[in-house]
Image: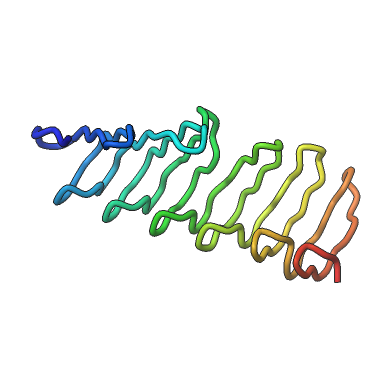
Length: 146
């Protein structure tokens, strides 16, 4: 159901999701917040929209914890951003169509990889540090040293 007031609108979807923000021709456009539940988790996206898709700068929260903050394109992480993983690891850098592409990945234990990725694995030129010491500086292929 769409509110008839100009400006900020509130939409309640049949599946229980709620959107509060700007609309254009019945689609999410501009800035807004979408809250919904799926797969036993609560999700909240706060940011920019274009043609009903996350597009621009925004933040995704899962179970009230920051999951991703950064740029979005066509409903996927794309451009500069940061992601916090459930295991305590974190990534900051560039995303390409939803996958990490190039940047710094740090584990909860303190290991750090700086470099390129493909399919969310170390791939291409990169450097791995463990306990403050360089372990490998060079090429990687599908997560393995070359």
